[in-house]
Amino acid sequence: MNSTAKFIILLGPPGAGKGTQAKILHQRFGMVHVASGDLFRENIAKQTPLGVLAKSFMDKGELVPDDVTVRMVMERIAKPDCARGVVFDGFPRTDAQAQALDAALARENKKIGAVLWVNVRDQELVARLSARWICSLDGAVYNLITNPPRVAGKCDLDDSSLVQRDDDKPAAVQRRLQVFNNQTKPLLEYYRAAGLVHEIQGEQPIDRVQADIVRVAEKL
Image (cartoon, rainbow, N blue to C red):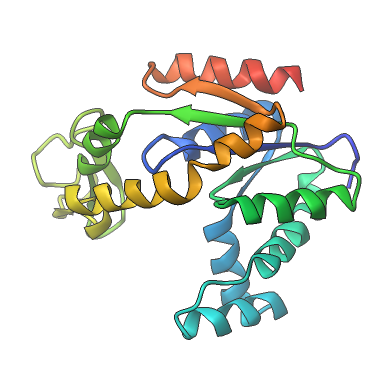
């Protein structure tokens, strides 16, 4: 891989809009969005050696070991389309994963260039996620606050009923945020100690959030 490739971590709670911001970085700089969940699904579906190994742990109800996840990540970022840079989303989740990733990158003379901490208050996140509804037929996503359907409870495209995912219901959202605050938020201190954290105020209008993200990326 090109040694000038840039590596950015998007760190933020569920509902902070990390996927949207990853698309911005891809469109503006050609950086590839690498989400750990997508990597697991892809490797398991293709039955790659790492996918088979990961599934063996998941089938037993065990967490996939960090070294397996890191190997999967390193394989992905070695592909030619990542030559201009990578935006990590959903990984690392813990200090141990962050240390393992840093070590793996260092072996290839690479390193994380910036960590974008998308800061959004819990009450705002609950409101955002609880307002998300999905078409039962084609999966089109609506938000009752920012992107409501023309007819309540119906998809604009095919008139199918809208449903709410179980993990978007308020009680489930609270649990997801608690897990994030307990397990992943401590990563902030790890990366702050390395001088890599850039705080992005995630409750601004989307164009302001975009401008702040682009400003940090341009400095790399």
